Each structure stands twice: as C-alpha cells, then as structure tokens.
Length: 268
Length: 309
Ligand SMILES: Nc1ncnc2c1ncn2[C@@H]1O[C@H](COP(=O)(O)OP(=O)(O)OP(=O)(O)O)[C@@H](O)[C@H]1O
Ligand SMILES: [Mg+2]
Image (cartoon, protein in one colour):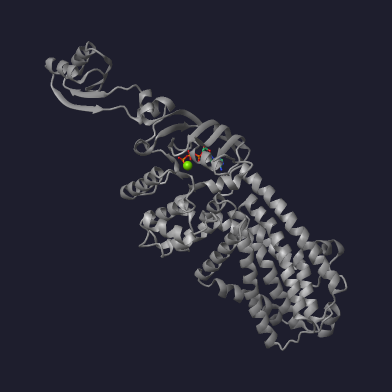
C-alpha cells in the first residue's frame, strides 16, 4: 500500500469528474434542491411547536444544515458502491485488481475524493444559505467541522459494507436507493432522532451519520445533543470511527475472498 | 530456471447451483525467458488459468508460484511480478488520455521514475501521435497499444497476454506480435494464449494444447507436429482416381492412400516415386496440392475438435 497510489487514484477521480459534463453542477443543484424543498413547502404548524420539538426556533437553519450534512456525509456510501459497479462494467476493475495493492489504494483515493467532493457540494449551498437566511451560528463552527471530519472515518468504514454488497450482489441499484432513503430518515434528516421509537432509535444510533448530523446541528444551532453534551456525542462518534473501519474491512475482505473463490471481481 | 509453476490446479465455478469445471488438474512449469503458448478453443479454460495465475481467482485446489512467490500466501508480490493484458481495450480508462492511464497504473505498480518509463514506452511502441488524446477518441488498434504499454509499465519479469490480437486487423496484429517478440528477446517471459495456429507457430518456444481444462499436449511446435505423424500429405485430382490409388499402394514408404471424391490423398512416400507412379499410369493429373503437417491436424487428433474453421 503506497501513498503515491492513493494520490494517483485521487487525481484520476478529480480528472474524471471534471470530464463528465455537468457532474459538479448537478450534484450542487441536487444539494440546493434537498435544502430548498422543505423550506419552500414551508413549516407546517407554528414555530413554537417546531421549537418545542427540536429545541431550536430556526426552521430554515435546521433544514439547510440537515440537507447539507446529509449530502456531505451520506454521499461517500453510495460513491463507493457505485464505484465498484462502474469499474466492473467499464472493465477497469480487473486492471486495478491486477496491480499489487491497487484495490486498497484506489479506495483510499476514492475516500479522499469523497471528502473533497463533500466539502464542495455541501459547503457552497451551506455558505449560500447561511448568508441568504441571515443565520447566526450560536456555537462553534469549528466543533461542527470536527464532527464532520471525524465522522468521515466511520462513514468510509460503513461504505466498505456497501462495497461488499455490490461485489456480492452486483445488480444493486434498487436496493441501494432504498437503503439511501432509509439512511436519510434514520440519521434524522427530516425528523429528530429522539422522536423515534426505541428500536428504531437503536438503529439510528448505530449509524455514524446520525452522530454527525446531530453533532453539526447541535453545535451550530444550540440544539440538544443526543447524549446530552458534545463530549459524550463526540465520544460516541469516536467509537464509531474505531469500530466501523475495522468491521467494514473485515466484512469487505471476507466477501472479496469469497468472490475470488467463485467467479472473480471482474465478472458482471 | 522455472519462473511460473503450477501444480495440480483445479478451478470450479458455481452458478445457480450448477458447477462448471473449468480447470481439471493442470500441471505446468514455465521457464524464465520462455515464450510460452496456450492454445485452445473457446471455453478451454485459458482465461481461467490466467486469472488464477494473476490471483484474480482463488483456485478450488492446487498451487501456483510466480518468481518464487506463492499465489495464495503472497498475492501482492505475485501481482507485482506480472504484467497482464486480459480485457484488452476495456482494461484502460476511456475518459483519460493514454498518458494519464500510464501514469495512473505506473503509480499503482509503484514505479519509481514514472515519467522516464512512460517516455520509454511511448517511443518503443510509437505512441507519440495519440498518447495525449483521450482514449475514447482512439482506434481499436491504438487502444490495444496503450493497453499493452500498461502491461509493460512496471517492466515485469513475466507478461501474460490473453488473445491480444483478437480484435485487431492484420497489420495491427502483426505489429503487436513484433513488439511482443522484441520484449521476449530482451529476456521477459511471455505467456500467450490464442486459438490461432499461425500465431503459435510464429511466436512460441513451447506450446500447451489445452481443452476442457486439461493439458492435452505440451511441446515445441516441431515436437507437436510430430504427434500427427511427420508426414507430408499430397492430394491429387485425377480423371481416374481408383487406378492411380491402386498403383500408389505399391510405392515404397507410402503410409496411406485414400480416395476422396475425384482425388487421391497420399500420406508419406518419396515425392519423385509418387509422381513417377502417377505419370506412368497414364491417367490425367488435373491438380496437385501438397501440405506439410500442421498443428490443426495435431489439434484435431488430440481433442477431436477443430480450432479454426
Ligand atoms: N464466471 C463464470 N461462471 C461460470 N462459468 C464460467 C465462468 N467463467 C468461465 N466459465 C466457464 O469456464 C470454462 C472456461 O472458460 P474460460 O473463459 O477460461 O475459457 P477460454 O479458454 O478463455 O475461452 P475463450 O477462448 O472463449 O476466451 C467455460 O466453460 C466457461 O463457460
Ligand atoms: Mg478467454
């Protein structure tokens, strides 16, 4: 495994993304849309009810932050799955697997690319919305960033599960879409996680995205943290960033081996 | 010295409850510097064998070592020792230029002086004209050239090519074969699969004939031809074949005489005595066709199948 390989993979992803016409524009547009939709539909009911529910009176801020964080932190999951599928279909996955540690290096490069991409496609709408709605950060943006950056590690770990799923099942389009919607709901994009029934909440807590979304909203808008304080939420996220990558790698390597024992990673 | 060793290799595919036995006990030793051919019809197991050697597949049973590294225990070292072209044009990124492809794969193979190596390959394979264009704008032949350059990027001790000329026209395929020969002359071991007889004859030091996952024969091209009997076949078109056939049966050292609608096929025998016998029979000789023993016959004899139509 070499850093040169990772960086080369990162550069290739950037180049490719610039060459697919409309790649960045459509992604940015989609994030804006995600943020604007709930805002345009408008808040049902009055602001007091909303505040009582979420702990903040700032409905616009809540939705905007939610959508941006969702786009930023959730995208890597699907990027990884789609990457496998696409490379398989265009035929280059085999070329990658022919190199000494290319599969790991390419995934590393992909993770870097996702981080970069997330910063752009969430950062721009976020900054725009911030100015537009005249939002004021009630607490540290730095803390929110810390939640976001640290949260990226377990999300990459989780994305290895998705990668394994695609390697194993191949045609996963419909399944991935369903998962994506469910994850959006579970991580509390539209509804506060604390309102879920206990069983569902348990599932939510096991997703790293939940902690990032909540941490970002809480630290910027002064909403309550899931476990009461930023420290305890942050520790929960740190636990995720240790467990998820290890678990993800184990599952991925296991599935990869099973696939090689049958028809190989290249077949589609 | 052996550079690739394969012992008792089996590979089964399972698809929807059915088992396909693609390799059934392959034993093979390939020597350093050798140009080794794998000749077999569709579905023989050539690609499967290559995928096992390159660690893309884990065999059901058996052992493989490359440059002394075991494919199961040290797969990255095995991969680092091999340059492999499997899917041809589809093995490179079409959205990138040729140079960007070489640079990317150079990085993944951990090449130290990537720029220099790329320049070297560009001039060696004459890629100057198109290397800085995107691959999607290339002709088929140009894509194959860049895919081949990718195979060579790490200057590996072993290169493996899976039917590399299959999509190329006569000229491009001849060019590619020339380049491969050159690489081999400089000491690189080449493993080359094909179902084209003439490629094997032109290129290979030794050839394994593979069919249904089994090696049916392994020898030099000359050695293999001897399997079909070392005999020349002469086909004579005659106005009265049976008279001549009778006369030829008496000629010294003729192995076999058979009649096929209007002509006689003679196997073996000295050319001048055969001709003398024909002329002295007084029968009109309309046409004559002489063929030396070829691999097609060997193949037919070993597998009961034809390689080419
Ligand atoms: N993924 C797979 N699942 C099931 N069977 C497979 C798979 N891949 C190959 N096979 C079968 O294994 C056998 C060997 O196939 P292989 O591709 O190795 O042959 P080949 O010699 O490369 O043929 P060709 O000249 O057509 O490329 C064939 O019967 C093929 O149908
Ligand atoms: Mg094949």
